[in-house]
Length: 120
Image (cartoon, rainbow, N blue to C red; front, side):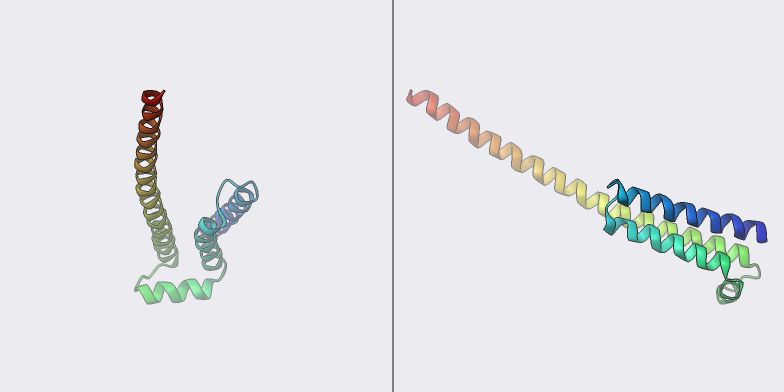
């Protein structure tokens, strides 16, 4: 069990460092990095504090603390992925609306250009 906890603590530190470097290099926006920080820090706290992990396992009705940890981690990352799916869907809708507005503007510009040609 200790090997798994050490591995997960290391993994959480790697995620935190990756997010920090990505924010620093502007690969990820700060508001999106908060979810990853929260998930990674939760994983770090649960993997380093056995009392909290045992309490979570008892609260979930599980006899094994590592199973509880993996369940919590899985749920956290599913929530993060769901949040990003919602954001991506909103961005797709915004892109469609923007493309439609650009098409309308191009049509109006072409109409104005044609009117100017006919007058000349």
